[in-house]
Image 1 (cartoon, helix red, strand yellow):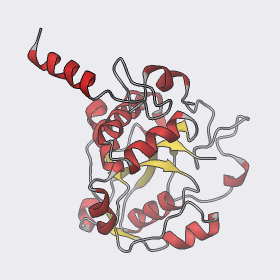
Image 2 (cartoon, helix red, strand yellow):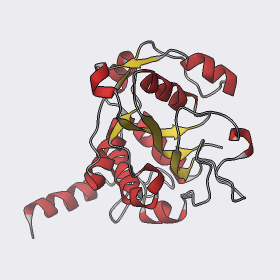
Image 3 (cartoon, one colour):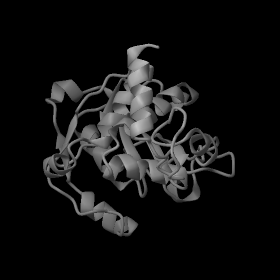
Length: 240
């Protein structure tokens, strides 16, 4: 038996990996910290039609949902792979708060595997991970959005560009209303590249979860003011 394979099997026997959702030991290859059953049966992929302005599923044939119609968006389109519920929530919590970095890379690869299904984002030339404030990055030790972008790069070759940074630390947005989220992230980002490295380019923001889309919109406005030709977003999950 190959020594690398033997070491992998021995490690799994000594320290079995548990599924982030059902918590059972994973006896076969995991995907994004989930067992095969949870990855395929306990996630909810978002299928067409969906709103191009916020990524929410649509029931009609129009390209935008009622709340988005008539509103000018700096970030468009927004494409989400999964609905933020069930196993998607468990997987994201595992890599965001429990240090399971490999799960983020694998889910980024899953985003890459579906990339060709979305022609709306096919002409963007670089992936821009949602930046963390340096203090939060030091606390966590990694940026989960960057890990997703790395997984995406593995599958698509879409280059990663750190075009943004957080100019100030924002409070957690989880418990805030939509308007409070807008206020919290206002002027929270700034360009991290010179103007000539941004001007005329088409950037695709990468993040784990979009809720109100306030952060994506603020990032897009920042890049557009710096001269970007277009800004869209590709996120792992969309919360409704």
